[in-house]
Structure formats: C-alpha cells, structure tokens
Image (cartoon, rainbow, N blue to C red):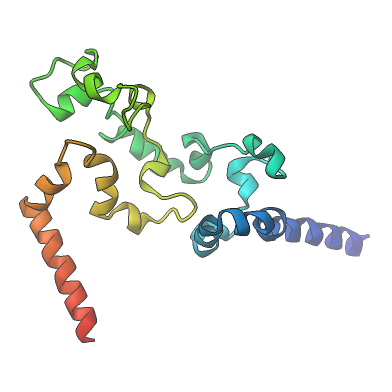
Length: 195
C-alpha cells in the first residue's frame, strides 16, 4: 500500500514539475519562443507551471482566448509583500494623482484629465487605453523573465516616461542622476572590455 501511494504521489509531483515542457512548450516554443526561453531561464521555472499564472482552461490554439492574463492578485499569491509595497508606491497612484504628479499647478487629484486627454484619447493615439490603464507587475517586470534587475534599470522606466512629446528620458539623462548612470554604465563597459 505504501509503495502504491508513494508511486502515485511521485507521478503527480512529476506531472507538476514537467508541466511546462509537455503541456505548453510543445506549441509555444514554435509560436512564442522568446517567452519559453525567458520563462525557462527565470527563477519562476523552479516550481511553477504556466497554469499557475494562466489557469488551465487553454489547451490548444483554438482556445487560446481562455488563457488568463495574470493580475496583481495572481502575483500576490507568492509575492504578497512586494504587491503590498507596490500598493503604497507612487506608481500605483499614478493615474489617480497624475495631474499633480505631472504638474503641481494642476487641480487637486480627482480633476478630470481633459488636459491630458486632449492628446491621449485621440482615435489615432498610441495610448488609447490611457483612461483605464493600470500599472501591474508586468509594467516593469517583463513577461516570463520577471527580472528584478531588469525592472531596476532606467531603460525600463523609459518605457512609460518617454512617450510622444514628453522627453522625460532625455531630461533625466541630463540630470545629475542620469549623468551618474551614464558614467557608471560607461565605466562598467570599459572595465569589462579591459578584463
């Protein structure tokens, strides 16, 4: 009896451990090879499967729409402390307090976004979702790699902070912090080249 129970548990555990390659990777390595590569190189591949974050309703190309996109509560299951810290951050309040964040002379939080919406809600705007956009873990942590080091790089910030006519990235690069960043980046490359 013990032997049978042990083998059954071993089979169930092995199925969980190897779910990514057998269940998902066979298709996704052809369709989205970068995602498979990033996931397999990342820390999340140790003990998580695709179904842990995306649910188990999606089984083939025909039902791809059934794959769930992870939300903050999905990440909270393992990263509760980080999600709570994010909830207290200015990035979490970015759209609520956006007018005051962008220009302190704007009206208090809660004002309409008419100044911003003039550009951001145009039919041909690249940011059509401006009005209902919410920052989530994937805003800074690229899908499937989830690298904390990558999220901390200024280029990651550029994704949101250098859109259209807002040259925040260039302004930051010319600031003392930006100059120090460029100097450190140059020195690190120079040291690596000489090594």
